[in-house]
Image (cartoon, rainbow over all chains, first blue to last red; front, side, top):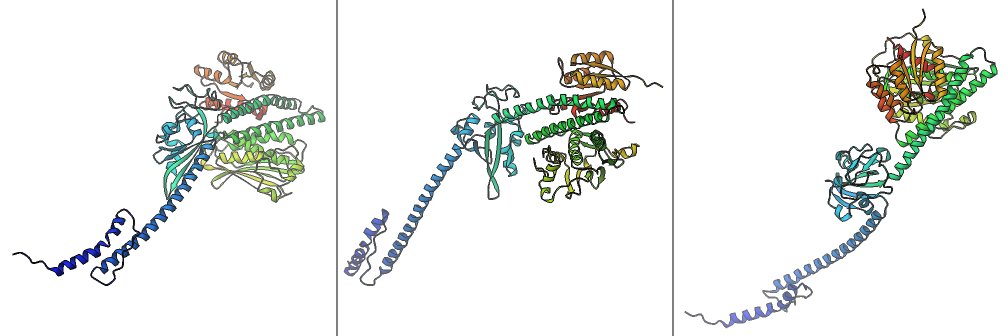
Length: 485
Length: 128
């Protein structure tokens, strides 16, 4: 049975095809990315009207999305260009600075290195990228001992999330990597202090500052600044040598004057003409002042160089104070200043540096004696107080004016009334005393009122006690030294 | 009762300082032996067997630190009390070298002869 042609159906098919044909050019263009054509609106409602309207709506949505995306891309490109420009500027800055700069990721791989750093590490920039920073830049100390990776500034910045600053005092040396060539401003430097290395170049003294790069709450890397400080180290060494020479060369003749004046005074205790005795005492006092000044200068330079070292040993603080007081009392002869030292019994010895304690006490006592007009008194007391051993030096001197009080421990500062009273002070004594006391884990403070005297206190923690209580030892009337009114 | 004479060896290259120290200890009934360089000091320490030594650091021929080390190598010199006297206070090496030893390390300029004498007496008769 064959089917009969149905003219009506055929007409319908042709009409639908004709309508759909209208969409063909639109789809053809859409296929190559052109969504600009519109669907013609059918003249009359029909079964395809919804389809046409739907396609037209779809085209509209696509067109607006395309416009949105195009704008976004344009913005992104502009932003990208700005970023690239910024990057170029950053790289020019980072490359232009004299210091070496290395950025590492959290595993220690180099992600950026500038030219000065590449020169310092003796490794071309492109070769350094991606390599382990710690292998590229091993460090050692002055004695040639390799510093463990975990104790390198960059590693510490990564693990602690804090900035680590190692200046000249840290005495770090960059070790040349075999095969690399480390360039330095002064190739001969540190040759003395470094052990023979496989390469012909010697280690370079460097200052290193490492800062963590923190993203969110995580440390994702670190930035290391490296600076060749060989010249500074050389200068510093020269300075130290000069200070050492000066201290030795000046102290020797000063000691001669000191001991001969003392011997002369001692030899002819009661037979000296009063004037001659006064002259000798004046020589003795002036000499002592010079020795003190040299001590202070030496300590300032040590503090500034960060080379102030503590050499602890069991120390009887009272004995240190007594020795000093005896020596200083000599300058009080014929002066109406009552000078006493009172020490509590059974004080423990402290595990501290007697030499540094002496310097602190010398500064405090010497100040008290110098700034106390006659008649007056200077009293030293040593006793325990809570968790501390406290030494106080109280005088009835000129006091510290209120406005000067907060600056009194500042280097080179001298209060106006002190300047007027003693012209040759250096303004370094209390600065040195404070720096030393803090180095000894102690505290220093004062109470003072202008024209009513000052009391300086030094507290040293009893935790430093070397032994328990000292066996009671009878002392001459509380180790008191007096000069009568 | 006359006090037992004690012998002190002073090793110091500065003649003026040596002389004033000698005078002081002689006046205190010490037998004083002197040396002006490290080698002479070492020889004197071993032959004269002093009760105590005052030792300078900066010395010709052999410096004080070397002398001290060599002295400690001798059985007789091992226990000899030594007070190191110097005007160098910066030297780390000195501290390190003498730190292991029972010693006193004094900066000359900071001490009076009288206190130095007391220190010597203290070392000779340690508190019981």
